[in-house]
Length: 184
Image 1 (tube, one colour):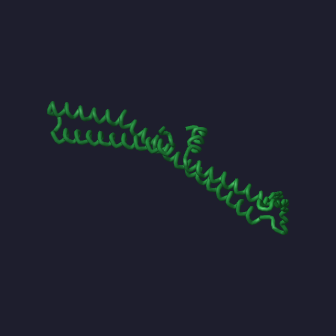
Image 2 (image 1 turned 180 degrees about the vertical axis):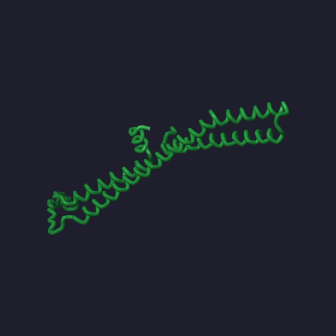
Image 3 (image 1 turned 90 degrees about the vertical axis):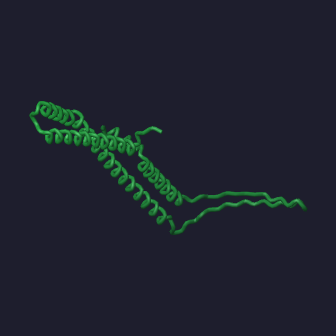
C-alpha cells in the first residue's frame, strides 16, 4: 500500500475526522479569545413615541469599552492550551490509526500467504500421500493402521486449510471494516 493510499484511508476514518473537527473548533476558540482584545464601539439610537399625548423621545447612545490592565490573557492562554491539546490528540489519533491499519494489513497479508501455502502446496502434498497410502494398502504393501493414519492426517490438513481460509477471510474483512472500504 502506498503512502498516498494510507493517508487517504487514515483521513477517511471517523476517529481521525473527529479529531480534525476538534482541532478546528480549538482554532475557532482561539480566534474568538483573541477577538476579545479588540474593543467594540457600539452606536445606537431610538425613538420612543407615546400615543396618548403624542410625546416622543429620541435617544442616541455610544459605548466605548475602556479596558484598563485587562487584555484577556487568561482566556487566550486557555484557548492556546486547548489548541495544543487538540493538536496532540490529533497526532496521537493518527499514530494509533496508522499503527492499527498497518497491523491489520500485515495480518491480512500473512493470513493470505498462509492460505496460499495450504492451497498450493500442503493440500496437494497431503492428497498425494493419501493416494499413495490407498494404493499401497490396495496392493497389500502397508497395514490398515498406516492407511487410517494417512486418512486422519489428510482430514487434519483439510481442517487446517479451512481454518486458514477462515482466518484469511476474517483478517480481510476486519481490515476492510477498519479501513472503511465497504460501501453502504
